[in-house]
Every structure is written in C-alpha cells, then in structure tokens.
Amino acid sequence: MKLSEFDIDFNKFKNEKDTFRFKLTDAFFELKENSLYQHGDFDVEIQCEKFEDTIVLDYSLIGHIKSQCERCLNQIKIHINTSRQDVLKLTLDNNLLNEENYLSVNHPVYAVYDSIYEQICLDIPTRLICENSEIQKNCTIEHLDSNKTDKEADERWAELKKLIK
Image (cartoon, rainbow, N blue to C red; front, side, top):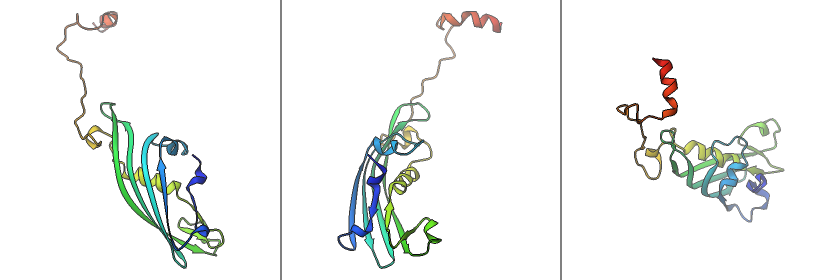
C-alpha cells in the first residue's frame, strides 16, 4: 500500500459526483510513522461532489481497531462506525494554498490519507478498556492473594525477605 493510492484527482472526474472506496488493513497504519495503532480493518467510502469553486467530501468509515486493554492487557476490538464531511475550496491565490482546506484550481489533487487516519483516531474512545470494546465485558484482573503463606510463595525470594527483617 502506498500513500499515492489515497490521492484523489478531481480533474479525472467523470461527472460532478464520484465515489471512492478503500479497504484499510494493517498496511494502512504502517504508512504512518509512529502510528498510534497498528492493527485494524476498515471499509471507507468517500462520496465527492464537485461544484464551481468547492468540492464536498462525505466520508463513511466502518470497521474496528485491534488493541490491548489498558487494564488487563487482553486483546480487544474497538468498533468504529462514523461519518464526516470536508469542504474544499478551489483557489488561484498562492497564499491560501498553504491553508488546510484550499486546493489549486490548476492542480486539484487531494490526499485523503490524513483525513481518514485523523477520523479513526478521533472516534476511538479515550480509554482502551474491555468495557469500550465490541464484547463490552468487565476486565478480569488477577490479583495476588495477600492471605497466602510464605511457603506458597516462590522460594527464590526467600533470601530477599530476610533483608527486610
């Protein structure tokens, strides 16, 4: 997978409306240096509508992120089903081209990779825990029983316990 696969060239539109579909896998997250997430599976659909001086992009993302629970370290899946809309302005002003939502009229190519990645990150819950996953179960954390006798403890620690006394 390459970043160039996420470039949309509005000059090549067949008509004023067009739809782009992407299947995102782990390779999508590998493209981002220091990505927050490494595993996921998404279906993305982007409906583009071109007007005289603007372009409207309607994103639809459905899928999940695989991660570890922050409490119990079990593997979890966080389901994401979201939509978003971006409006791009076409301009000839070179000063405006440095702004985020402006494209050149002469070369209207827009990279949607960052917008897709950003939307995924925004829709993931703040806490990656079992309760927020698809399973929605409580975490199972095993605590050591403090009522255990010294005989049940690991013998390798016996010498260190002598230092405490």
